[in-house]
Image (cartoon, rainbow, N blue to C red; front, side):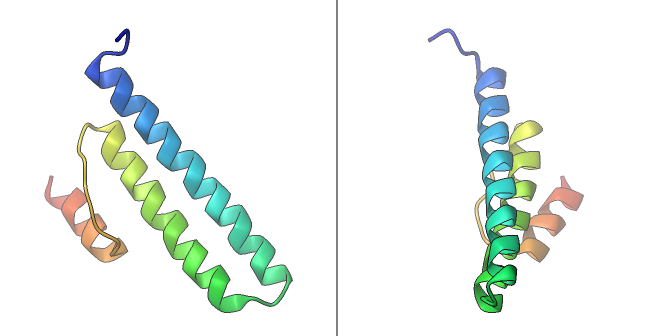
Length: 77
């Protein structure tokens, strides 16, 4: 209602970035407990979410899980 489109994109960007940091913290915790595969998975998720946060910040909604593809898309836009 009171949120215009750009505010919604900003809020969505913030949400994705907060989740990226949460995943990164969880990845660090998993390293400490020797769960290296989970740490790798969560690290990849953190990077993906951080990139998606940037996309929302500039007003682009992107889907996919490949960091390389997301970086390529960003460079092409």
